[in-house]
Length: 462
Image (cartoon, rainbow, N blue to C red; front, side, top):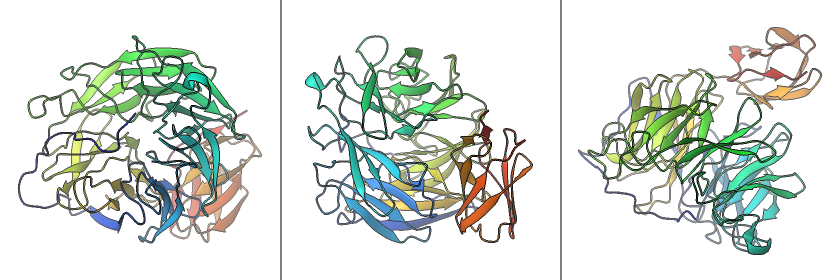
């Protein structure tokens, strides 16, 4: 089980309190948590159909069991839901958006057996408990999920539980919309890894990929066939160790991840962490080993790939001031420290970044060492606005949601160059019909401000 607070390492705070940002970058603290409205946000934010951002706090709220919150792009923060324990406790992970704009999430604790839950929640704050873990004999269904679920192409939710299962080393599960749970596999303490952490990502072929605290990268089919793809190593191993928060599937077809230990041991006793690449066949490469300054250290969160093709992430500690960093890294391994948090302010970003359709990055800090209970921030680096489709695939004739900003006045929508019928629902949402003759490719939306392109290619299913 992941503990709520961990003494990670001595901070490498040097110099006066300051931040590092190039003139082309703008950093803004949008809101702060104060315990009453939540505390200790750890998960990534998700942009809703209304253009607002939604997330969770692990603690705080009316019952100190955590919250679900909404924040506008301008910083208006609203508590959507306060957990009470029986409906969940300590929602460590961020939310996953469903096809109709609802959200899905997990809590590490709470529920019928106090071993965690999966829930759904509407943007308006109506919560439904879908499943309580450890209700089967000997906890065969798993327990303590603290990573997000992923909604697969077949409509089911897939996720990991960090404990329980046949060998009490965690599970991978599939959950139907009606709450029926299937345990796909139980991890062991053997060579196949144990205690999955970081959630799952679905590959192009339909299989899921993830990591374990037993220092493995694994693949699992929707039917439950588990394969160990690669093994990470000990604290001094060049591939790094202790991958915390999963993988990202990049445009080159490979997976990229972070480890919170291993790599550079000159400044960090157990290594400052690494970034690695693994192919779908399991070939493992270390792209980068962190050093405390200016890179940062302890990259706990997963990476994301932005519209410029680079990967972006956060390091929880280190940087020029010891409060953590935001960085970018090319697929070839060139890392740039973009922003350094001051150690005595809103600091220590444990969660992943989210790129909003306005082109900016949004994230949270956890501030475990000061009275402040965390914050929400935005970093703009000059990337252009874009649109994203929900879902990212569909048959000809299917209705697809297109999310963006400033969509009012849209004059045309095209799938890979083929014109499509569309309806402007709001300034942040369009619905469109996949047209006959469309191929896999970019979705183009023409607005009075210019043409917006989708961040990912749309896949036409035949």
